[in-house]
Image (cartoon, rainbow, N blue to C red; front, side):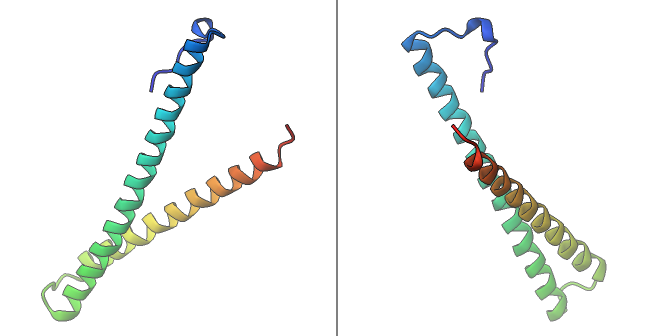
Length: 99
């Protein structure tokens, strides 16, 4: 996403269309970044479940691997929940603004 200095912004319709397209592309980038982050959280959860199951079935003997995988998944989930809370809080703050 390219951020233009204020001096390059003009009120012409073509420039407005261009900035709207840039904003839409930026929104898409944000959405894709959130989707990738959620996929990483899901992958960590799946990996932790798999390592835990492998430990219970005897395929993994190292308890440290299980603990690390479970703790990593917990931390990632906590971070995802906190990011979601901040997004909801920002949305609520914006919705309370008077226009």
